[in-house]
Length: 64
Image (tube, rainbow, N blue to C red; front, top):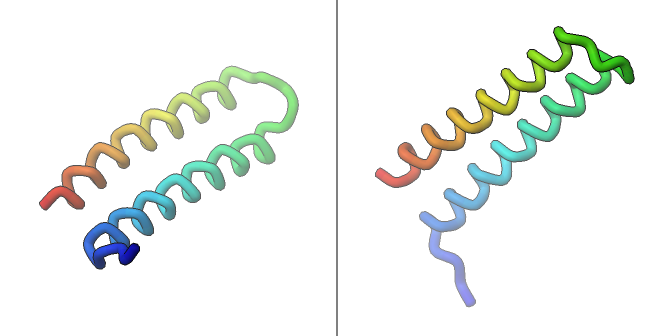
């Protein structure tokens, strides 16, 4: 089964975005360590919020 070029672009873009999110979460874990501080929690909430907004924007962009 052949995947169309448009669908391939959508898949690659989504996988890259999710990979960036995972790298960001790992980076936050390394930066803030084992201690659950208020700053680390806010950074994690910010990263999750950014991911949600970015995936929404990416979906709108890919839908065009």
